Each structure stands twice: as C-alpha cells, then as structure tokens.
Image (cartoon, rainbow, N blue to C red; front, side):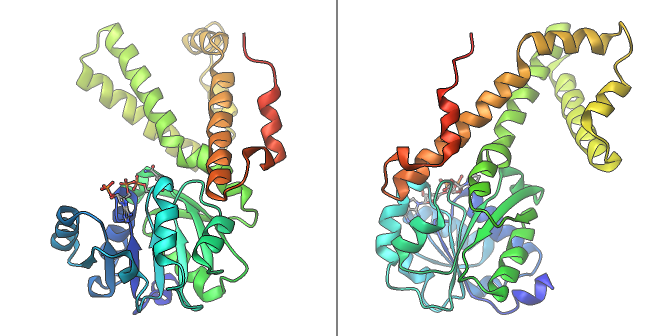
Length: 297
Ligand SMILES: NC(=O)c1ccc[n+]([C@@H]2O[C@H](COP(=O)([O-])OP(=O)(O)OC[C@H]3O[C@@H](n4cnc5c(N)ncnc54)[C@H](OP(=O)(O)O)[C@@H]3O)[C@@H](O)[C@H]2O)c1
C-alpha cells in the first residue's frame, strides 16, 4: 500500500534541516521517491551543495521552487521562520497539492490561513527518526483525501512508526511526550551514566551498560505487553536493592518532576501555537488551567 501511494510523486522540501533531511534520507533509502523528483530549498549555498552531493536531489535557493510542479510540499523550517516562509509561498499552491508540516506548534489553522491552502497535515516526529526508529503523530485536515493520507503514512514510515490522530490537540500533547521525549531520555541516560562512573565504572563501560539497559528494558516492555509496574514488581524483592533505590527515586519526586516537565513542554507548545495563529495565549485550551495549581515545595 505505502510504496505504491508514493510512486512517481514529486516532492518539494522547504527548509531542509536535520529533521527534513532525515525524512528525505529515509525516503530515498527505501526507494519511495526518486531523487530526481525531489527539490530541496535552502537559503545557504553551502547547505544546498551538501544536499545535492549527498542525496543527488535538485536544490534551489528560492522556496517557491518547492511548490512548483510538486505533489507534496514538506515544511521543515523552525517555527520562527514560518511567517516569512508562508508569505513567500502564499498563492503558489494548487488544490491538489498536499502540505506536510513537521513544525512544532504550527497548527493546521495557522498553516491553512497563512498559506491559503486547506489540505494540510501537521506532524510531530522525534529525533530517532534519523535512524528510522522515530515515532510520528499526525493530524490531517478534512481537505486531505485518502490519497493524501496514504502518502502521508508512506512518507512517515520512512522515519519509523506513525500514528494518525483525529483530534489536533493530541499533536500538541505528543510534542510534549514523544517529540520532546528523547531529551528526557537522554538526560536520564546521562544521569545514570554519571552515577555508574561515581561508583567506579570507566565511562565507556558505564555508557554501554546504561544504553543496553535502556534499550533492553524498552524492548522487553514492548514484547511482554505487560504493564511496566508489573515488570518492576517482578524484580523488586522484599528488602532488596531495587526496593531501596525505588524508595529514593520516589522520595526525590521523580514522577512529579517528570509530570511537571511534560506539562511545561505542553504549555510551551500551546504558547507557540497561539503566537503562530497570532492570537493571545489566554485563548488557548482549558488544559492551561493546570498552570494555576500550587507550586511544588
Ligand atoms: N529536532 C527535533 O527533535 C524535532 C522534532 C519534531 C519536530 N521538529 C520540528 O522540525 C522543524 C525543523 O527542526 P530541525 O531540528 O530539523 O531544525 P533545523 O535543522 O534548524 O532545520 C531548519 C532548516 O531551515 C533552514 N531555514 C532557515 N530559514 C529558512 C528559510 N527562510 N527558508 C528555508 N529554509 C530556512 C535552516 O537553515 P540554517 O541552518 O541556516 O538555520 C535549517 O537548515 C522545526 O520546526 C521543529 O519544530 C524538530
């Protein structure tokens, strides 16, 4: 289904940075699109030369080249560049074209109005996409037909797993969970590695131990299908080492800190959404009421 849906498509990429290049590389590796059918725009000549040399795609300085004779236009710029880019592209898209955005906080309302184009998919990928092990949550407007959705699924498969949601708010939620998630995991990896070094392990050994433990635990949880609390209980012997360590993690407020961090990332996403839609942040969703809870002491 997926490979077929992309057969012969012409793809324009605006803002070919880290994430958009990961997507491009995945599509080319899997022969889902032909390099000759891709045009990547970038303001810097050095970056354009690198993209052309690495992926053998067409490159252009002018963003409008990405909307000219293409079927899908991928937007990969940073949120602060979006207004300028939309002003450049406005009026250049025809109704059959599909716009796929990976820009954090850019709602389909902001994109649809800014581009004057209704067929928009808003995606939230994450950085493991660079090795094809990412997870992307996406939402399509009503104007995106089944062909557009099939193309979206096929393109996102190049980054790893994909989940379509039918409530756009869940893309903002995913921004705080899976989009920003690798940052939390990397910090935990660093903390556990430092703790292992503190115990006396050489850093290279500590790193391997921690990464293998993280990877093995995640795969074990996925394969077993069990609730993670059950897996944790299985290794928590009465009066044992796990019980001792868990007590300290709970005492330090690990769960609350994680919850606060995710809420903060979610609220930040809502503020970016409001800015890009050019409305006051207070007009955002009821979830923002969570900010009024008492500060942790
Ligand atoms: N990285 C993540 O974990 C992640 C996860 C989910 C979603 N996202 C979203 O993905 C988007 C890209 O993130 P990224 O990490 O790939 O950032 P990035 O590497 O900075 O990519 C953006 C690219 O756009 C280029 N650019 C700047 N101004 C432009 C313009 N006017 N026209 C066309 N291109 C322009 C930048 O050039 P310069 O190099 O010269 O600045 C850069 O190469 C962001 O909106 C982000 O919210 C990122």
